[in-house]
Image 1 (tube, rainbow, N blue to C red):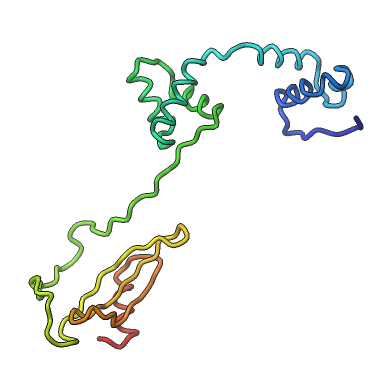
Image 2 (cartoon, rainbow, N blue to C red; image 1 turned 90 degrees about the horizontal axis):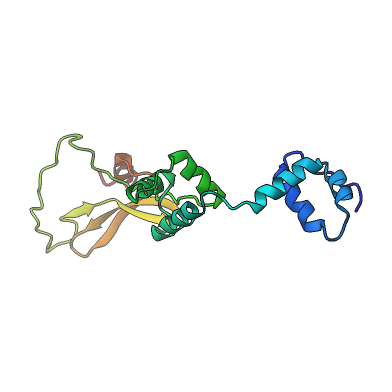
Length: 191
């Protein structure tokens, strides 16, 4: 067996589980000595492991709600769902039970919303939905498009000639700001 030292962050419950696993191979007295666990503490945890949880029904229901909503519900929403079903668990109890079950909600990333109300002066509508052009370089348009590359958002701002949909210039950035378009125009000598 040797004189292996246990990590000081190991809990008494974890030590008890180790002793239970090795109990058939080695004498209990030696295991408790090596793992530095008192006999009374060992038997305390053995008795606790034998007792069924008083929250068996709630544990099953929490797990069912969690999987029913594809892991998107955290303890607050699961708590509200349980209340709607007539359960009277405290939200902290729901949180603790979810930790016991190793359930964590998957947080969905926030969507990008560029419009925040009236920010400045609105440009005149010069195109008036007339997108057909008979000659090149008569009408150019631009827009900002969001792409996801390797779990990171990238923004593309091209200038397109409406005559043949040719890309005249473009710029790429990690954030969607006015400078994305203005820097492209100035660096390409378009203005």
